[in-house]
Image (cartoon, rainbow, N blue to C red; front, top):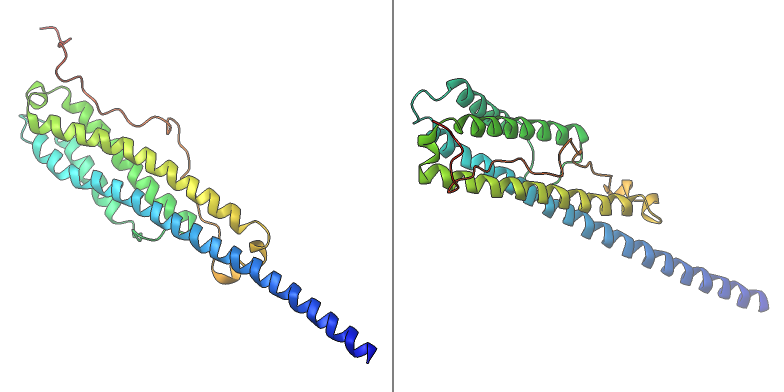
Length: 211
């Protein structure tokens, strides 16, 4: 009888320990779900601001192509760069899990940003362009978009950092992979990444051009 009582006590203790473990694991699992959804939500924001930039470019190209003798090679470059972005197959609402896929997306966007900056620099040589309200409005929208891209990329990396830390922490480290919670890649920092590209022309200020 005494042994039976001891056995029941051991079973009860094991049951309590099991419930505690299940509770901890369940809480950790739910936390991973929340963090993963946060990464996906922030990725959607990143994708949105990049898409906004891409949507502005056709209007910009149309505007600058109306300028007499505007450099055709520059227009071709930005058109091709925008097309290459569309060739990178990536899901807008789900953050990439493959570092190579994110790197390909980042390269395409970087090439487009470079082509856009070059086009705007070339446009500086055309006073008639800078005098049009449509070009000034596009320039302002692009400047705001570049700033937003920088902000959203930073927020995405922060969300990924929180998620990856949780995946590698106890107790999730023992089961995260089995449930599909794998580490996610970051955007790599590039030289000058902390400073958004300059696309501002000093419209409205006194001209420094000499006749």
